[in-house]
Length: 179
Length: 155
Image (cartoon, rainbow over all chains, first blue to last red; front, side):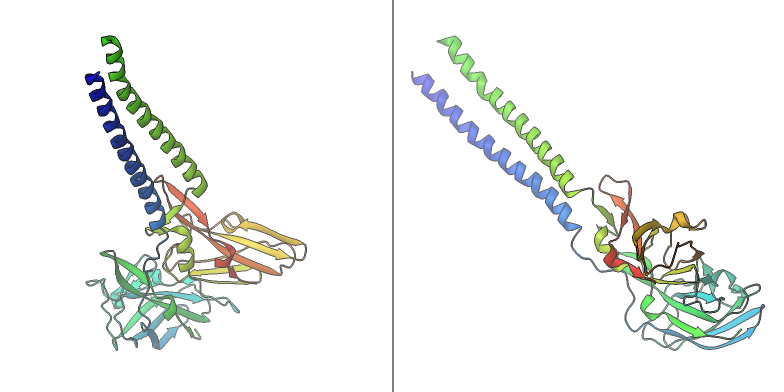
């Protein structure tokens, strides 16, 4: 009878412990799942340019169906890495959708990377400082009449310790030209 | 007495094993049900793809049967859905199926597209809605069509 009592005590001591362990592990397991799911809903900083990033076309010269020289100035407060450049060659067109970056004549300055023009080949970062001025030359053979061009500055922004190219859509400019 | 004592000694082990097995099975069932309820949420840039829809910035216009689109933001757009409303109701279509030259990888950052679309009748309204490419929670690729609230009215 004495042995029986000891055994019963042992039995009762084990089961609540297992119960707790199971409960805690189930709670941890479920909270990990919920946390992983909810984490994706937490807003994180979006990739964007500072508000006062700005460039403008100071002047241009055009030889129809041959060459377009554009002088760009940084009139903003932040360095810029490059720009997207497009032209509109259809009358009444509201948006410029002909990419001009691939027609850059890089021997006169600038470099074409993908669908953009970067100011410096040596320094692909934000090398174009405020008040800097640069003239880029484009071959416009076969583009037809150019009604306007649009320029969108590009900056290199650091997000999660990685350099990423940011399009400054809020600083996009439209310049009507006759060419 | 001895036999009975031995039997009683084994039962806690079996009970514990059974308990653990039952808990694991129940947890698995709850987990699978939970995933079914929540759905396979996609991610882009480390956040829920629904939130990324807010960051899409497009320039879009339509004139003379031609559609012009520029991606002015920092979110690549994989496809575009169109909602064409006319007096008889509305129809939805995928732009990449209406044209032949939609870029295979979509409109990257700074990307542009112009193409002619065939819209029957005179539409009262055309809304362009971005479709994004993200990663599913299983690790594969997953497309997500942004809601109409993130659409661009071009007509």
